[in-house]
Image 1 (cartoon, rainbow, N blue to C red):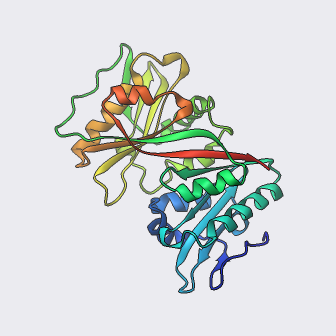
Image 2 (cartoon, rainbow, N blue to C red):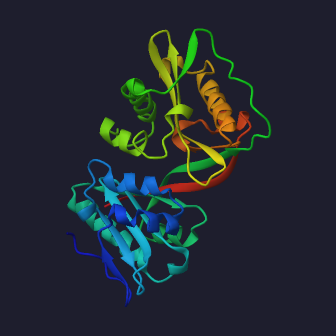
Image 3 (tube, rainbow, N blue to C red):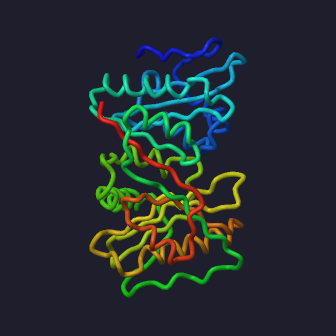
Amino acid sequence: MPTPPVMPAGFDCRPATTDDAEAIARLTGIAVDEVEASLERPGLDASVDSLVVLDPARSVAAWAWVRGRRSQVDVGDKYRGLGLGSGLVEWVERRAIESGTDRVAQTVDDEDHAGTALLRARGYEVIATNWKLTKPVDEEPAPPELPAGITIRPFSGEAAQAAYQVIQDAFDDWQPRRWGFDEWARMTIERTTFAAELSSVAFAGDELVGAAICLALPDSAAGYVEHVAVRADQRGKGIARALIAQASLDFYRQGRPDLVLWTHSGTGALAMYERLGMAVQHSTTVFSRKL
């Protein structure tokens, strides 16, 4: 295992496991099954690529993981200012170098001013912004208006490979590394909150040309659209709008009237979502540094 970071007196580190998922979720607000998926994603060895920090009472105070150029560090609100974040960021950078990469990126909540200042002080630069958009729905939405020649069907296992292809092709325009199918599946359709019955795929004839991957998070009044993508040659026809409208209708009928999704500045889709009546509720920033 890589040399663990130096922690304040009384705090200890060890590799994270999925047994820590609920504690990490309570600390960070991340869904439990997203924590589990992050620790089990192909290419990440949690025994050397992750850490949890335990406070003197043996409660989880912070966590971190790194896989290639991607990393994450989260410190609980009441533990900030103690040096946990600095130690974990240093560890992430060392581990990234050990794994053979020359650059590392991390996403920071825009309300985490201390975390932002820490990364800037270490030479990290802004490379992208993520926006969380919401749309409250007060009455049952109308069924989607489908473009000519387009049909929408519920997601099925048989569509998984084609949906993955469309989504990764679309994300190739901005993401630094293409995910393999197994990694994509573990982070989406293999999560326990993945809702196949609320997810939709769009077809032009017999070809899948669009997909909306949706989650039903427990104890939430919102319906989450995890991914929306349309094949490049089919964009501009209203397919994405139709997929989102279908998701909104399905979530409403399930008793989840609010629609939520995240979009990345690299997609150029923010204006489209705002035209659909969605508003930015929250944002995060992606920072990157050459090692």
